[in-house]
Amino acid sequence: MSGSSQAPSGATTTAGDDAPPGTPGTGENVCPVCKGSGRAAEAPCANCGGTGVVIEGIAGG
Ligand SMILES: [Zn+2]
Image (cartoon, rainbow, N blue to C red; front, side):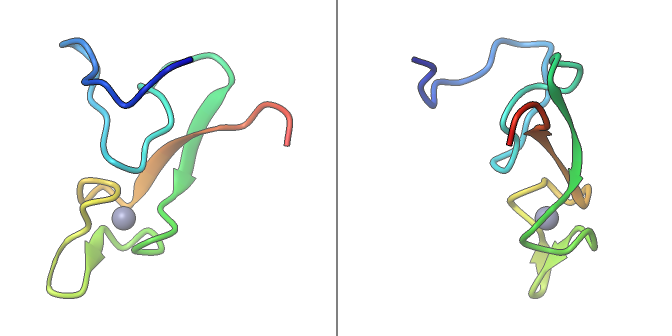
């Protein structure tokens, strides 16, 4: 039952992250919005925060 509340300090997440970095069962994935470029249109990609990668769950399917 995890909502969209703000993450506690210490973890850096972006809008496209499913979980904070280092969370078991998750891993970096290429941002589907900017395709890993870190930029969308003329501005830094908001989905990945300009990193080009997002943290997504890799367990299961
Ligand atoms: Zn992106």
